[in-house]
Image (cartoon, rainbow, N blue to C red; front, top):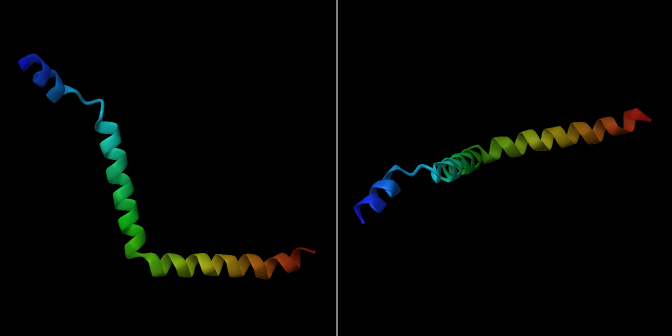
Length: 57
């Protein structure tokens, strides 16, 4: 039983999953914090795209 817990404590195979989850949580937090700024930037990009598509013809 001791060997099982020692091996389990030293096992790092799940560390990648934990790191990915933490990165996702941080990204979601940043999106929530900067939601209005992101929305303004995306809207400006789409306005620019739609205004310049008529000039391509």
